[in-house]
Length: 508
Image (cartoon, rainbow, N blue to C red; front, side, top):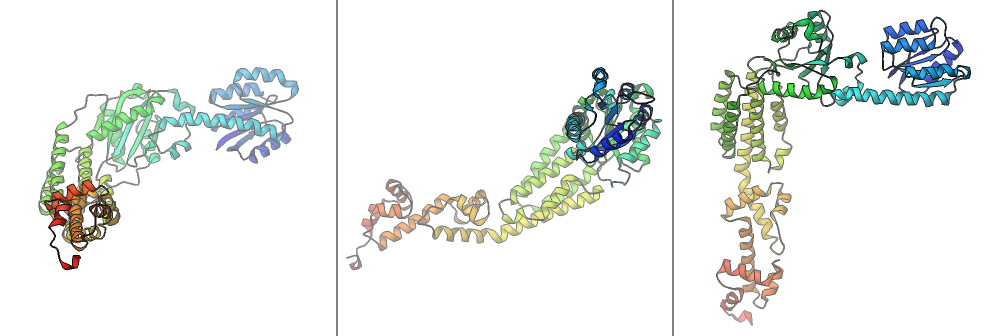
């Protein structure tokens, strides 16, 4: 909602203008009215006014002087001038003062609506440009509602990215207003801007570049900011850059600082770092995570539950004493969850399994202590193994029996693994493994073997049936292909097989 000030010495006109705005349906609120220029200027000093609607001729201070002085308070103020036909020369001068538009007396509703709609469009466009500074940092809904004063864009900014330390409770003091008050007190009234980010565990703090001049900016300053959070009972890590940036560069700088913070963050102790300084990334931890993830994934595939849980428990205990980066721990958990999903996703039951919600929590590290996290991860892993082991023991043979029955009843059709996958709600690769395990053959060879067995039966019971009729009936379509397959499985051609069938009187 944009705030409007009406300055008009004629009370009837003032009431009319106010009524027209209030019933316009536009996102404009009449914040105040004034009957002379000095009163209007005083209101501008103490209120965030977006739109000034002012008469030219007013007592104590005329409209043009008011516009000039009000623009010094808010350079982006939108001004609509009210004038009569006799004041047209004044209106021309007002153009130099960047007046948006003007209204001629007597002001009619249609005229007012047309002018104010144009003003609102300008304000929305400007506001969108300003709030776009925080696109990708804040939620879009929050950034649209945010309104920054023009003074925010007058100086370059210093940035701090503050992140709640992992495995710590989230205090009620994790509030932008409370934190801002503490920072302002600690730094003797210096202005700070605090913004919640898309990540609920992360805050962005901004201040003017002039902060460097007044506070001899260094790592001690970073510690002083950290102490403000400690005083509020908040366990956080902080990253910053000692290089200031112009407002439009804030998103780029935020991403750089945030990424570096996440790469360096560990769960054993908070960190304070300046990304302007050279950083050492622990490459060894990345290589260790890759090796361990592959090892544990292999145990999942082989269903080695006891060995997996024992080794995982020992590994988690080792990490408690090490400065393992949070990003690597998160990557390890993500790889484990992915390995379990890969092993189980051929089962329809997995898709609606409640343990998946548990997996999502593990990825977000919702636990308030490392001990709780380890317990959750081990419990999750055990439950996944139980699911896989139970399904493999009870369902493999049963599934093969169902597949085999379906194939035997569809010998006079063509069934693909994709058809079976849809029918039995399992993946094609899982069907392939089950058929191979229980038939000692690939799916294709097993299905062809069943069809050839049926062809032999038909030849023996229907000796007058032609080879082409057999081929078409069993869905081979090509007689030559049927003959080739038949010879591979039986050792002779269909004609030779028919000729070798013993003649009996029933065949007459």
